[in-house]
Amino acid sequence: MTEASAAPSLPEPEVVHDDVGDTPDGSGSLKIGVPREIVPGERRVALIPETVGKLVAAGLKVVIETGAGEGSSIDDASYLAAGASIAPDATSLYSGANIIAKVQPPLKDEIELIPSGSLLLCYLDAARFGDTLQLLTDRGVTVFSFNAVPRITRAQSMDAISSMSTIAGYKAVLLAANALTRFFPLLMTAAGTVAPARVFVIGAGVAGLQALATAKRLGAVTEGFDTRPAVREQVQSVGAKFVDMPLPEAQTEGAGGYAREMEEEFLQREREAIRQPLSRSDVVITTAMVPGKPAPRLIDEEMVAGMRAGSVIIDLAAEAGGNCTLTVPGETIVWHNVTIMGPLNLPSSLAVHASQMYSRNVATVILYVVKDGKLVLDPEDEILRAALLNLSPVVTS
Figure 1 (cartoon, rainbow, N blue to C red):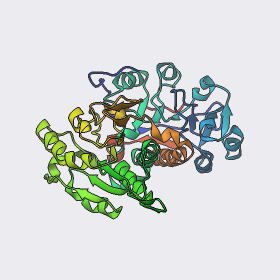
Figure 2: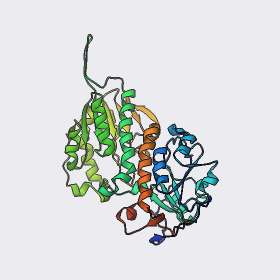
Figure 3: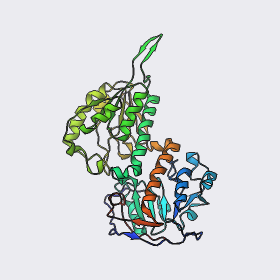
Figure 4: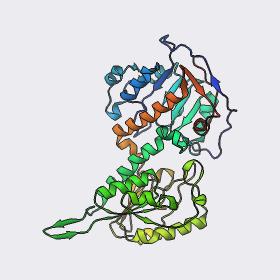
């Protein structure tokens, strides 16, 4: 998929109240299609049997492409037992589908199979995959992006970004513990006392807080940094010291509860605030990201050179370019005796629980937009107004 330099031209929003058409088996139910993910390295699946059963009980028809659950240790028989049908290939899976539930954005070959007028649920960052969004829009496919679900109370059960961030924060600490040539906890041994590792987490969102909590459970001394003073209590609640850089909250928090892009002057102040904690830490986990923008560059070569020999950086912003200027997305490098890891798609490495959590988010969205057996997309709804990247006429044929 190619990154786009400009947002695509989208159609005018419409309210959809279409009659339910017949699915290929003549049942008259809306058909939900769950394809096998074909992006390399993706092991998650959009729906698991537990949530399939709930959707079937709600009167919906669920079709799973054969083998879709293998990466999450789910076989076709488990889906059949939950009431789903199994499609032998992608072509039959997409045929007649009213709702498509995926994890990754579709590739071009997949887009050509998605029926015009259907609703696609998946991760899709419009800033990174504008060309993909344009192809879907041209085909008449409405896109609900989990990247754009607003951080409001009503949408918490749909917030797949938070679900996957929990996994990423947890797994980042395990990666760090494996790469670090030290123990995490304080140990009292016959050979003397072993001091605990020091873990510094930049960014106190969902991933950052989970990383702090996990590192604390492993016995490390933890510190957390965020430009938002309001998260001080959250950092302290997981047993970490809060590293402060006072700024007005209005300058650091953007729309929908997400972080906002900062000017270079503020980024420089941020770098100065984290310089000392970096120099005394054994593990640094960075999580700073701004939706639709490259990750802010907070750690430069000079700062890495000032870190302890043998220390580890886990850059969870690698997919958006990285918080460290030395990060290579998808690779592990060693620079100045510091190991720098830029892991991609960490949730996929814990596919069983990642699929379980994501599936519940997906099912919540489906049940939210299906009313009385009809697919209803209201652009005046606060959640849909944010999460629907486009709004094409939806038909249920």
